[in-house]
Length: 222
Image (cartoon, rainbow, N blue to C red):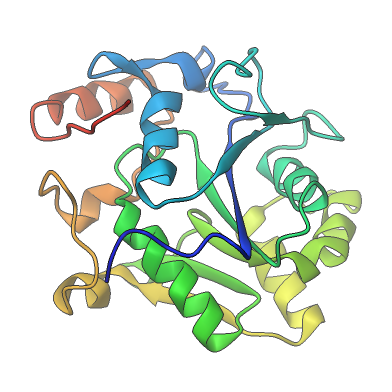
């Protein structure tokens, strides 16, 4: 499967509005292999052929891509998801977290293909049997149900996605990354093992581990 995907019915958003409390500084501009994390993440979306915007931000990131401001700051990534869905008319929205620089573009391709094929309201990857919140492909029809979760301060994204999909009476799909790798549908351009792809960089120690991958983790950024 090619990394390039049709763009006429999809929007893509990079979630960058977190408080970064455990990291101690804004993650978006943290350097990794000589580039800020936001540049790595936007490169992933670009490799997948997705025109992208930034959902929420602590710093001024408008020089990197258009920014969709959170309607309710301080409520975590779910607020960014709701603001992003409200900003687009595309029926599908792809979401990637700012602190997931190892996700291969081909994984986004597969998740979107699965969402279209199965008409799933939510499509996320799973690793070792555990569904992950991001990256995610969401149907825009979820917006009112996710907004209800946000208003009720049920801010956990994965639970909100599951609840909204159930309210919409549409499937919640967790696609095993292991199967995608074994079937040859997804590979990493630098050969990183799948166990690393969905890692989040939450603490300085996580960033140090990521730097240890620098020689293997290289990505062209125009």
